[in-house]
Length: 296
Image 1 (tube, one colour):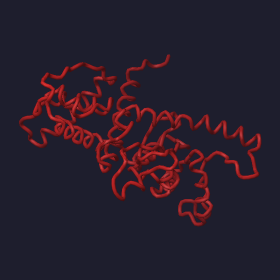
Image 2 (cartoon, rainbow, N blue to C red):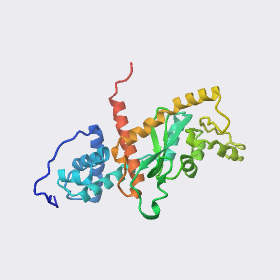
Image 3 (tube, rainbow, N blue to C red):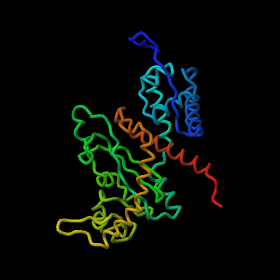
Image 4 (spheres, rainbow, N blue to C red):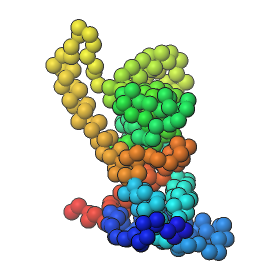
């Protein structure tokens, strides 16, 4: 260690369990190994597997850099550099929206679940403070929009937007509905997307439909002033919620990586971080699917 403790005694090291498969560790280590060959790096303080283990521990358990660096004989700045290097390599493997939609269209999918979530961050300083404050959650953070299939598996995440951005505003800004319409996919969103269907009504001349746009946007019924929901509308909302509840599992799997509990790194790295974690989630799911015995 470059800095000795002022108390005059050596720190105590301990072991923790990392709930990940060995295949994930090997995949990340192979990415690091390939990167080092490309850079012709001749010496590092840790091998590819050692660096992968430290980075996965930081991402999964949100270990403080100073704590985990002391137990591995490196500095906190070295661990920070390792983390940024690995999430950049992983994010490069994330599927882009066009590829995801083409795959769904090839699988004859009909409905895509759309939802947004807030990634908590530290309070920003200066003029960046107010745009990143979410009035809905009463917290500072960044908004991420995601697409899930009907089984609740997260397929794609957007670049992060300011925390004050509403889900429907993010979808409109990213032109998600138009991209889905190009592949004959129907978006399904919660009450935060109520009013998104009006964009379809305003599209009088749709190039794909050859006239009045025929795309459908699925959202639940929403009660208005002096106009409560009818029994049929409540039943329809219950059925719709049963279909959409799967999307919550997608973001839950993503936020199982505790580094997203409250992001402390620079906001310009958060998009890379979220996409890197999505790659890790997909890899873990594929490992479990491979290990699961086939149904007889």
